[in-house]
Length: 471
Image (cartoon, rainbow, N blue to C red):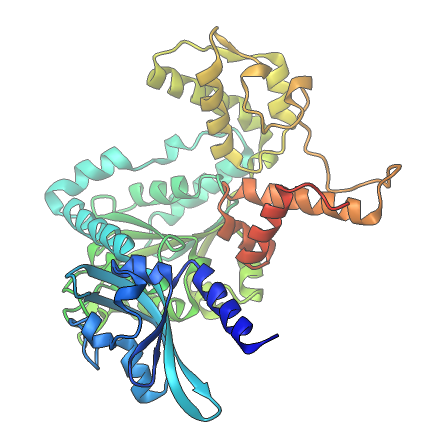
């Protein structure tokens, strides 16, 4: 392939990436700038290409620009927050990974991959501000009463669940760390809030944070706080540990936390002290940490997604919540509860479900557990006109609903006439992917982690499913 074609192909590939790509030569002159970077910076490629970096971004200097720092040092910079203004005065907030570009031993430039975190950072700071407000003593009692669940809200007639509730009540008397495992939709936060409300900390803050909801650098600053000047644009802000002082901090999807951040969490659990990002002063905090995962913890440890030392430190008290398919005797109780709930919300008077729907519910696999059951009832309440939910009112994803059967078929196949092994493998793969997507409420990243494959691979397979199978 001619060199010119290779260059054009490379530019096309870089231009198609959905993250900002900015490349400068050894003199700091921009030589490549894709449309995503232009959108992030509020500029056009013509305003940046061929110009010195500091001319286009006058608020930066040779120390604050990650591109120029990499050119000077020759060392890569990973996940560096950066806040700057372009020459139009537009404020830009990104997380950058910046790498040196070498030809042989000679440094010829630097390439930067930027992710826009402006809106995420704004939302996280608003969250911190809101948590700070609701953590004020004069408001804590009212807020906790309005927002928290109690053990009486956990509806069950299942013996195992009742045993777990009793164990959780006893655990509420202490301040030991707690680890809860349960599939998506099994009610992990219900248990967590109930433990907090039954504890001596009930008048203190309860703060929940999903570890998968933010990039690692934002999660670290959200948890531990920042000091002014710790990175460009940083202010003095308390983190969630400080805001939860005296109360409970719930960390959901703990396995999504990066390993280096898990190490910092371990230190907090061991000595009860935190240090803000960029700060030098250690602060003592009294926080009970409760964590949750939606995959077996020992499997997460074996796969390198959860630090072994953190697992043993936080697994002082542990609970494994059974999925709904293992507590089918609770389905009727939960159906009545959700009917009453949505009757109040929608000002309706739906009294029951039909016998066919009841049989379907009893045999369905419920990959989304109690949360899925609640959503199914809500969806049906939007369709029903009489006082009984029938099969035709149910959402279409319930298998074989029109026949009154919803047995979750086992993942086994018979060599039917006309089907080859590749056909059967394709069907099996499609069903496994479908179950993973249901179990994670359609979240591609979490489904990919559940399947043990890269997100890009799962996205490709999902796109392929939308296309007709190969001939």
